[in-house]
Image 1 (cartoon, helix red, strand yellow):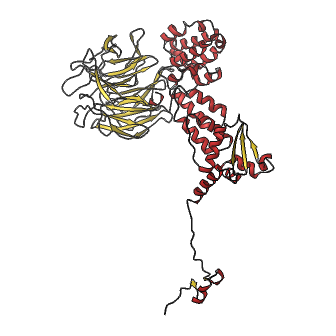
Image 2 (cartoon, helix red, strand yellow; image 1 turned 180 degrees about the vertical axis):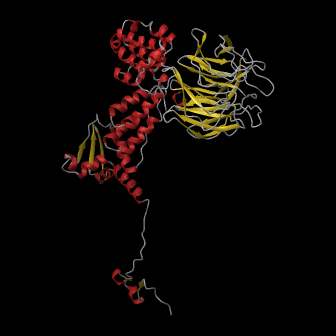
Image 3 (tube, helix red, strand yellow; image 1 turned 180 degrees about the horizontal axis):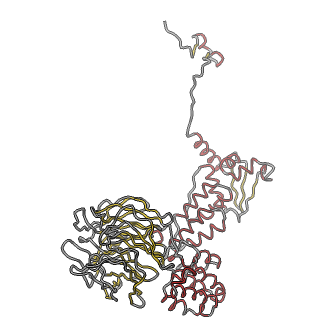
Length: 600
């Protein structure tokens, strides 16, 4: 005999005339929940079809001569503006109207049609031809996500030729804060390219004044700001020359070289004929002529600009294996990813190699191949990812310092296999030739070389007998080397870099100890001072500036070659380890190629 489940009891007689009242269900909590996930999508799609057929529409939206029928409930559900209009009868006269007129100077008809379609479909096509009208319409109708999508569309398509126009459009709209900030960052990163576009010359005084006052402009030197101010002023000279004193006060003239001040700034007719402008130039001259008074002249004009967002790819070149053998290996670190990867290797083995970046190309100069000191030079093009040879130097050099300045590559000192050198030569990429310039006052091997305010600095090193703490500076205009304030400690095989208008020297060897100490030269006080030491002892360390920080890469701690890397933050005076190199064991040369491909 079968047993009927208690949940559902019905007799055969009752099945003849079934009705809901005749079905007996238990009173338990047993139940199921049925859902049809695609129903909202199907329903809205069907409503869109009904709207296009002109059926069941209960409101007509007018813009100029265009009319768009729609359903109130759909508009109120998807567009906040219409939700407020149709559900708040006291606030809007149009809440009960069949016809609603929208001003054509507020919303473009094509944009309104696109946004109505979006209310039904949840989809919208954004293009260069409609993005401006869409972002205006989305702002008016309070469609925040559509507005954000339009902003993102424009942010990813900024270029030197449109960023100023996009910035002005976003400013005028008043609701696109993210877009305004993105434009500002782009202008700061690619200032030198942006100001060469005609749009810059059409800006108002207040707009130019704001831009040249940015503290985070990414520039090679302050001359880029000076030229931008003068070009804008002279574009409509008679109307704009009255603004020159104010704009020039935003230019950090003390950071220009004395020769630039004398030959370019002072010779300009507009500046010569303006008393306030001449006062600014005199202040800059005093900064250079009287170092002892720089503390009294300290202001924002003596502080270098610093672009914190401008990242570059860090290339570690050559160096040594754990056993001390030279390498041709190259690896690259992308700060945005946070790890190292192998790049195209050089054509030959090079340890103790000089490395510098000029015109976004990476130069590997001289070095040691395991048997000979080298005078050969090769250059890496980041776009093609290929190395190619250029003209040989006049001298063989290992443990050599290299630095790019004013479209020339300078190499200083080094070791030729017999003695330390004091000779300096300069490479011209246009003529592909090397020329000897004035020699240093000392023979320096394993010295640190950097640049500051248009001059080249050679720090420390040794001559085969003595290790130096002395520092000398080279002025390319006068062609002379001059001894300047010495470091606090003797150092050879040190790392040297410039950051925010100061020179940093780290690690090295003093003749008895391998060093972790770091010191900093401030040209305003004309003094060296110690800062926080590195976490590791590092001789043969490479130091480079990137993303407003210092990166100490590799080295030798007295027992082993190092692959570790640490980063210094000047705001916190603190060093932190980051990802170690993967293919090097220390003694590398380092250069940074800016990630500036987006402005091309």
